[in-house]
Image (cartoon, rainbow, N blue to C red):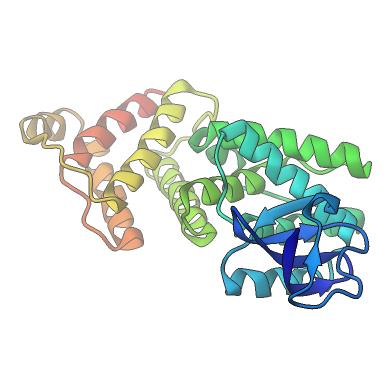
Length: 276
């Protein structure tokens, strides 16, 4: 038996759990007539998950004002799929953020509105595992609700999954994705070419940029390539100068210094791309 702490509605309540502390219990009629301090049998709940912080509990309560219980149940199945695929316990906020996002995404689809995602290729390249699971989730929802959800939504769900796995805010993850898209546009404009998004050199560049951003943010960038800088500056002046333009954009966006060594790596990537 668990002790009721807070009733969110007739079907959802927060209770004290002997192992997980505060948990959210979901089940038809589970909260009806219940009051704080009363006992409730945990096994009659259809779903339960941990939602520790008071702020998260309040946000979840607001979510229940416009999201019906059947969709809440579907979302908990989805979170379980993600946790099973990655063998982790996700940050509790995904129950709120992903539920809210998908609820409105599906609402737009039902209204006949298209979902466009200009960062879909970059997201797949940067987070391939998250993207694969997101594709599985979108297919699962489409089958459960008998609705055709556009492919672009896979990218958005992948970002939510990555945010929950890394405990980084979705805003930060989105900023990095947009930054890389901006860098690619600068490269295309400067070299006057249209990059083939399936080209292996493009794939390497995108992965490299994501890796660089993470290392800079974590303060783990320690490379030194002084011996190569002068050689590349002489051999490939256009790509070398462009590499510094990209570095300045990254520094402004990240508000952190990008080591000079990055000019070497970027120049090599740009030179491969310029051969197109």
